[in-house]
Length: 118
Image (cartoon, rainbow, N blue to C red; front, side):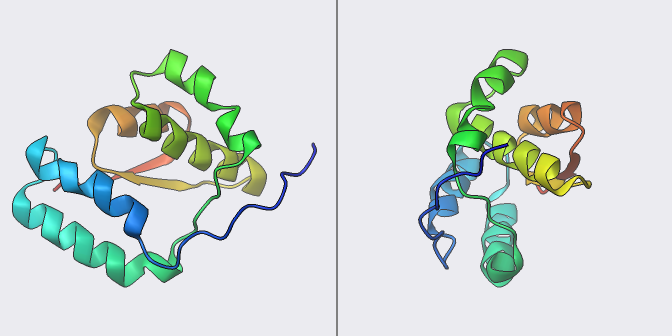
């Protein structure tokens, strides 16, 4: 399997996730207090999290995942990243999300879903 070209460095700060998390109170996937707790926890844990670059190998998985599950665009990329990581590591990978459809898709891909919506 060919390796991906170098990936630009992933931010040392969780800026990309703030946009996604900002919609959670509006969509009622998280309460306002749950949203605040999640943002604080993310900021505290960010440096310890494994971050997967969006590479051609990751993006190649998106069309199939989008056909199998009712996912939004970035959700499909999130899932594809975890599926690729699990394949590359050949060990179980935990998948963290607050969206029921995304968590169900993760379980369908044999990832270990962790629901942070409560």
